[in-house]
Image (cartoon, rainbow over all chains, first blue to last red):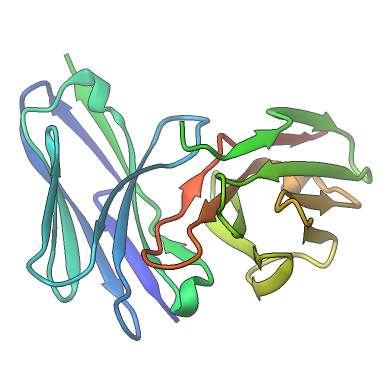
Length: 110
Length: 113
């Protein structure tokens, strides 16, 4: 069964202080890895898809990278509006479902 | 805005009652997924429908059922509600072919008193 583990559970950063979030996965065959952002009480918002080791995607202050065992979400010079829970997920065979990690709750302090 | 809509936004009901949650997928998406998110469990997959047919079931209780209609909207029915069913319920939709990204609706917050 697919498994996804995220760390740390929570992260507090000063505004402008760069850091990385980790997502490690165990799957029978990688069919992609997704990153989502979720604000409290809202639906997950799609950020990135990564398909193969070595792939990188960027959006504003966020960059996602992928290896054969884990993915990193790097946040550069974050702002308070980047505060949210960041979730990673892997799709099952035939796109039957997504298996999510428990997320990293990121807080950016002004 | 993902293009996925869900109603109602909030639902407050009593134990033992039955409720129906509604979801409309993005235009032309044939797949609809339902997920439950509670504080101690994270996002858990419940069920997947593709073009009206059930494709996969996850940790869905027997008291819960779903269907997808010819116009592709979906309903999740929760019956004999218990306090522990209080959670956020999300639906998501994905494209028919190609990439596997799922796009989520804003959710329905269910409170069982």
